[in-house]
Image 1 (tube, each protein chain N blue to C red):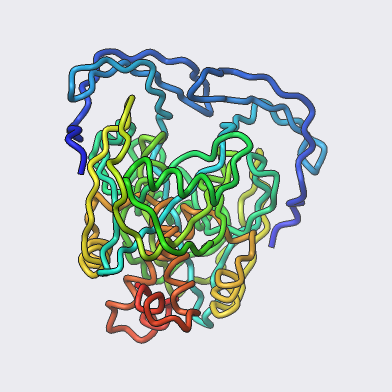
Image 2: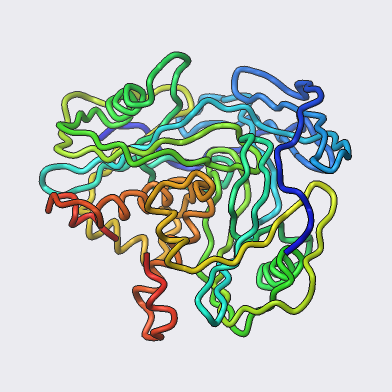
Length: 197
Length: 197
């Protein structure tokens, strides 16, 4: 045990070190609980995110294959995106699933919210299970979003997680699958209970 | 299925929009697979991270309680930190566990690497299970790291995950626990097999 206080920091002032349409970097000056001043403490202001674990009636998971420039690698990801200003997260996740994959779902289950990176990002990511998912139209693709929709059997997806397939190794997305696992273990619905990992 | 290509982007040029001791924001100009130029695409260059799931012989998990200014909340976290330049991750994780908690471990198991946030961060986070963990000295605390070491029964930790305790809701860290769960399910060692979630 340390004697250090772990209480809240007091925000003294903020400045924006960088800000454009894509990224907002705020640099704060704060007072630590012991009274010491710390500057700068950088945070990235970000809108909330939503992730969809989308399961079809024949037991496939609908994923999107996407090149991620930050890590110079093609990833296989959950349909996901930003919550628009004033938009409810349950609306955002339906919009993103439809835009990215052209699919709609019969039922949605809220799996809860997480902080994607509490050391730097201000936002939350809320995860949803979508069941009874079916294609209703063509996906919308544009800008830097060049996605390929992939529908694969759940067992194959889980085997990829266990084998350490690097296309499935995004922490924020694996955390959503972990939330689903815990939800499935507590579920009395056999179609959901079988989704434990 | 879309007809969009999902192949690698070609890096045309880079500039640093912001850089100091704490954060490096690189802004790239890239050519998409279809030939279109995209600018700017921001990435945050970051050193790799390590997370330690540290279990004592009496079945407690050793955590650190820390205020996270980005989300204005005190979090209960795995001991974790940056890999120093030239440092091996398995050295970094032992150093971080010792510095943050004053504990050493009898055995370490590599649980694999993830991308913390492939949409923005360049780095990986590698997770480790440490068993036979015991206190050997006082933690080192300094700068903005005002930590409180907490040792809690594994079952209490897991109950907190299931109840949605917001102190445990950091995606990158939950993903480490998910890697442990998959490792535990495949383990023939009863002391590790019981760590499934």
